[in-house]
Length: 206
Picture 1 (cartoon, rainbow, N blue to C red):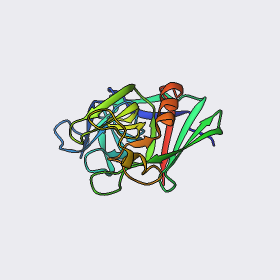
Picture 2 (picture 1 turned 135 degrees about the vertical axis):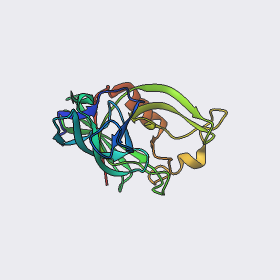
Picture 3 (picture 1 turned 90 degrees about the vertical axis):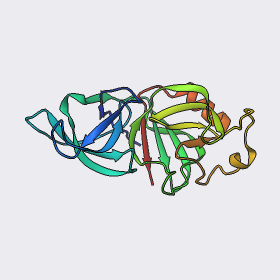
Picture 4 (picture 1 turned 180 degrees about the vertical axis):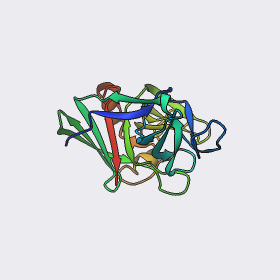
């Protein structure tokens, strides 16, 4: 498996949204948003007025989108060359590569694929991480989260408000079950957390 060596991102923080404009002008309306640092955008053309036309995935509508952003925000970044990750949604598996050779395969649970909860396909890179989080909105948390697109994370199967693993959710590994993140067994989430560096490419596909 050969991974890209670089990708184009928006040069703002991982949790900062950038408006995608309908036309290349400051007063043009926003038709979508994309978050910085971690998500690849395709540059269609650079215009003379300081805007560029891009094609990407809209975080709001959860659909492919084409629009305009300030050219000064575009940045080409180098990707980690040692590791690479492929998420195969149709198989509900995560493949870990080292020096382009497959070294690990993890069973996972991706988004449920309804209108609100699905896992976006595309090219990303690994960002920040943390030991755990809890979402009051869902009444769930998880261990060993690793970001690949704003609130989209790799993390363990979920725990409840008492930090106990929810066994019925853990039993769903291998089928679509999450709110959009990539769930992993605790030991697999810990391995990824400990071993995969920032800047590692992530390809999410069918």
